[in-house]
Structures are given as C-alpha cells and as structure tokens.
Image 1 (cartoon, rainbow, N blue to C red):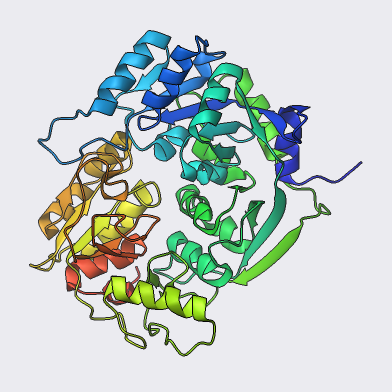
Image 2 (image 1 turned 90 degrees about the vertical axis):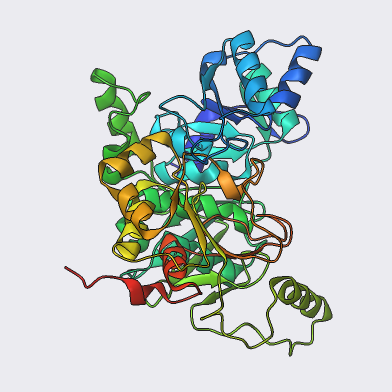
Length: 465
C-alpha cells in the first residue's frame, strides 16, 4: 500500500476530476463567506442567472465591517446587503445580532462548520486557521467564490507538501504567536509559497486547540497555500457537542475516522524543517512585514549589508516605523494596544491577558482595547469575570468582530501612533494611515499597555502556583 500524508488522504477523498488546465476539482464540504465579498459575488451570480448548488453547505458571516464599540449601531452597507442576499437565496446567515456571531475563522470551528477531514473554502486569506483541527481549508477569490457557489467545487493545482517539526517545550509565558513569528523570521515571507504545510512535533502535541489555531492562522503570512495538524484526542474533545458536529451513533463513527487522520509513518514530504523551540523568547516585529521580527531584547538590524535591494527594504521599513539601526525596542513608548483579530481573540488569549493585567492599570497615555473573536467567547469571558479585570485595568471591552485588524469598520489608529497588536499583519497603513504596528502575543501586548512602552512580558507574569 502506498504511504500517504494527511493532506493526501483528505485531498484524494475530495478530488472528483482533473481539468485540461491541470487543476483538480476538489469537492468543498463547507463554504463560509464574510460580508466584504458578498455584494460583488452575488451580483455576478444574479447577472449570470446561476443557482447555488448546495446552499445548505454555505454560511454567510458578518465580521469585517461590524462596529465593535459598545453603543454603536451595528450596521453597514455590507451588513444590509448580506441580509438581503441571504434571504433571497435561502442561505444561512450568522447575523451581527446573533448569539453565534463572530469572526469567520473563529466561529467556523466554534459552531462545527469546520471539522476534521472536511474541506472548507472561504474568501479570506486566513481560511487555513481551521487546519488546527485537521480541516483542509483554502482561501479563494471572488471568481473562485462564484465557482464554488455554482458547483460546490474548487479548481486547484495540487500543492507541494512541507512538514514543520516543532521540537522541545515552550517556556512559561511563551505562546503560539511567538512560535508563529519565529517561524516567519527564520524562513521568510515567501518560504511556504506553493506548499501545503503539516505542523507536527512535541510543541504541537502540548498546544491547546486554540493555540494551534493561532499557529495555522499565521501560516498565510509566510505564503503557505494551506496548512493542517493531525487530529488527536484534544481535537476530538474540542469538537464534541458543537452545533453541527455529528451526534448519536454517528459520533462514534466520526471519532474512529478522525483517529485515522494522520500521515503514515513512512510518508514523504517535498521538504521537512525542524525548529527547536526550547529557548524561544517573546517575539515582536520591528518592521513592516511579519518576517522583520526580533526576540525581545535583540536590537533592530544594522544597515551594514551588501545587498542593495535588501538594504533599501530595511531602510524603508525603519523610516516608516521611526526607528534607527541598532536600537532596542524595549522602553519605546506605545500609544495604542489592540488585542483581538482571528489570530488571538479566543478565550485562552483573554485568560493570558487577564493573568498579566490583573490588579494593574493601563498607562495613562495608552488607548487599549480588547475585542473577543465571537459572542460566545465574550460571554464566556464575562462568565469568568475577565471583563471586570480588563475594565478595572482601563481596557475598553468591545463586542466581537474584526475591529482594528481589518479597519473596514472605522476602528483605526491615528497618524504616527505606535500600536502593539495581536493581529497578523503589520503592513504600512494597515491599522490606519501612518500607524506603526508591532505584532506580538497577547501577553506582550498586555504588558506594553500596562508599562506604556514595549517590555518583556515575562516580567509581568505572576509567580507560578
């Protein structure tokens, strides 16, 4: 019998044919759409007089344009249009007012729309977040979105395969975001281009499902086509009793199937990379792409390099960020802190933040906000009293949504502000025109909010119990 990787196993059971352009048609089990792509895609659908092939497998989520500040009206033109199209086509809509509302990549696994062994498509680059539970997910463009709506298939060239083995054990105060940023710093932003990546190793085994989601979410920042992690007992326990998870006698069947979803011991990958995470330090970006990242305490790079193109890129990034070569980011004043996004807005992230800020106060000159990834996460945090810890510390406590990560909802910083953000992109003007964004873990962001400047979050951890 030919050995197969986990990716091969899911791909082969969903591949239904090869086109003349060498793309395979992959059957899509679930299709989730956020509101930014609905107007154009559905107007094309209507103009062509196409019908939706499997509308019961499609869900629309409202997240990017949703105002998250308490007291603001939950409405935008995109929200209005999604309601109209969802009703017209008879598609399930997770409305902004729904108890199931949240960021598409948070609610997809939360509601059981994404499950191990499934294929999923979403018109958003961070679709691969759900690879954390063994779901093979792909981001798609507007024309691909229309194709999926009409055929319930996606045309893809089968990617090459890479395995990233993460060995060792993370120290206290080090999380999945630090691992993700370290990988990008080592490999660069183009290393995953053309690859489907499987994460494995002792670090993965010890991570919670939510931490695995952070890691898979950030794989797109080094250009991976998609990524996946083999389901284990943690995955099975996490997926149990979700809204759309099989139940009764079917539950026993799917559990056995999920346990078989792993790469065969002698399966071959096109590339294998091992990274020892034993001595990993908190990570923080200094520049304008996620690969321009440092261990906290390291110095901003010098410009003493021969490659003129690389030197120009470094110079441009430093100028935008207001930094000088060889400087230390520590004690650099911060104006704004954003804790949220599909990278780090789950309940484990909020618990980590509460551990850092409990009994402390946000620095007087810092505007700090926390935006949970879903309404369910918000309710859970409030049940645990985390919201009181945040508010007592001086954080704004928002409703769920993409908020400052997307900026399509008016939630942006001001020109020249320095922002510590738990989101996934630090591009120029991403969080507002002229805003200087440093990406970090929730712990690092929380510590910066309290200190008023960039600082090693490990100094703010309470003594171990």
